[in-house]
Image (tube, rainbow, N blue to C red; front, side, top):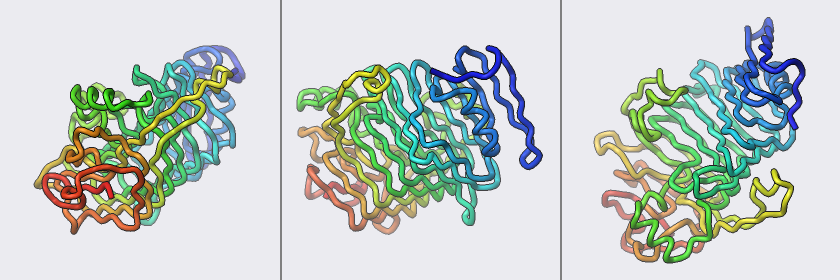
Length: 360
């Protein structure tokens, strides 16, 4: 149950001398549908006091230039989608989730939307949290991170369990540069225990049902996130640059299956469990501009276990855990990675030809 101090439809404005002004507006009941702007820890504390642990329907804009630390709690996204917006500002700052767990119901999603970032000397980061989903056939119950023209971001010690929706991405990087992923753990892809027949049918319907990467490298274009940016409230005033994503590191991370309790089970207080017998393809691109290739990519000390595939298409490089369209061995480096329960065509592994890809 959400905590709410004050009347419904109350506008609270908090002014702090150090960072300026931030506002929290509640347009719903029981602390739902809150819009908040966070510039410092006091703002975050005030927002959490207003919303409690149910984040349903909240849109939170982060403009922090100092570290924010969440209480170590369970938070819930129950019946309405939650969005976190990170606007372009000049200084980097951390958001430390402090081992908090964000449980996403089968009626909602959790969106992370980012523009801009830090600097080479002062990167922005999001770290130390778990997102537990309820991925289902209605494309609900998942985490969806979208970054347009982002730079100098560091994602560390983040866990995603049953939170990767079929045909979507955990992180979609459109025209970004200097992005680091460190100790990311993703468990499960899609919404069912896929049989060989299901895999074949999904591939025939649309191969993207299967090869949608956990971390997608993309171009900064109008249709980067599906549809026009002009129709997306956070991105509508941001101009795409037409540039490719460059300078990405993925290290010490895990991509594997999931067998355990869904977030919906925790929300309902039941012991509902799910099995997701594949991981997503881990990182790469399936679109690109041959004249603007993805460059300076480094993937090392990662474990890829049973990423999704279809037995009929072992030569489709898009199914390999690492695949980069127009990638070259000079610009795409993979070392000390562990490939488990993977399948492909030996003549395609690590060979350039449309895609540079590895499954072993």
